[in-house]
Image (cartoon, rainbow, N blue to C red):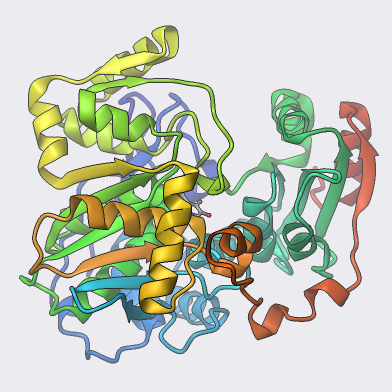
Amino acid sequence: MTEAVSYISTRGTAPALGFDDVLLSGLARDGGLYVPDAWPQLGTEVWDLPDDVAYAILAAEVLWPFVTGGSVSRDDLDGMCADAYATIRHPDVVPLVPLGDDGTWLLELFHGPTLAFKDLALQLVGRLFDHVLAARGERLTIVGATSGDTGSAAIEACRDRDSLDIVILHPAGRVSEVQRRQMTTVTSTNVHNVAVDGDFDDCQDLVKAMFNDIGFRDRLRLSAVNSINWARIVSQIVYYLAAARAFGGRGEPVAFAVPTGNFGNIFAAYAASRMGAPVDQLVIGSNSNDILHRFLQRGDMEMRQVVPTTSPSMDIQVSSNFERLLFELDERNGHLVAGQLSQFRATGAMSLHATAMNELRSLFDSARFDDAEVATCMKEVHEEHGILLDPHSAIAVAAARAVRLHPDVPMVVAATAHPAKFPDAVEAATGVRPALPEHLADLLGRPERLIALPNDLAAIESFVAGVSRVTT
Ligand SMILES: *Cc1c(COP(=O)(O)O)cnc(C)c1O
């Protein structure tokens, strides 16, 4: 029998929980993030699977120890993985494509419904939510704000789920047409798009205000599917293991370069290494919002204003999932983590002791690129290899080239978005306007469904209350 993983908080005081509760609660009650109490070690059940094993089968094998112990049976998990990864429109799910002949490979993570890597986690997470809620006879109302990119992945994850209703706020007229239509052309009756007469900050403030209205929050059972949810991280471990297996698996080193914002994606690569995957080097690619790069260079973390870039999904002030790595570097001392983070909140700066810094630098390297450098990388890769990269993926390619340690170790670069998701930046850099894949080719002709509302909490709350199927 597989032993069930139990989950503890990075801040050391919230009670340990099983998978079902960690899934539904997101953040721990002490403000920390949940992590496994010990890292399950990969064995023959993963390394000895046939080379051509289906991605869904590998996923169920990897995820089982993390998920078991609650309402999800092995059959349930197998079925959910099969359904989730059937939505990815590539036979290999996460194809590896060579970038030249120096051992650099693109791991294409953008063949899901919304053309970005978040689908690979969210397609499964939406099904897990639905399963666990159904087992409890409960429902949730998911609310969120988007500047364009994350809303569609959340909508695709929640659409048609019996236990979930989803309301996504976007700033009216300030989201690109493709991004808006990826949300508003979804016809499922449990999906609700609101165009708010305001900007993205207004939308975020409205969502925060709904969560802070405790009566409203409890009555409608508000929840979010945000990137600090452990279930999202754990689902992302699978594609790093798929790549490691492609290069020989156990004992054959491999390096990864990841365009990094909230640190969720690269933390999954770190988790794979803690589970025994032979990870030689992890490369953090940053845009001009380079808090992590500065931290690795100088050893102190300092918060700055966000500047908008051509890679908007990495435009962050702090990387919330870094807390999970901090917990490991602090030798799992939650009180130390809590102290460092309250110092960080109070002063906007944080530093680590030398042993922790050395450990961090023994596996991680980083590089940062401004928009002009990103455009140059997109242009060069197009000229040299005939491949169009989106700006996020280009940052990871540039970072891999800048700091790769061992030329004989395969360097796998996470390609996190399809170029057609960012057509203007790609066209400006390469002169080529990337076409949408076939399943979205008629996107611009599909009917849209959305409601326009004022920037007013009472109006938004009354809309949410009207569409939610939560009854208390
Ligand atoms: C979300 C996102 C990222 C950043 O991933 P994190 O897990 O937040 O580090 C990078 N690229 C794209 C295209 C994304 O959508």
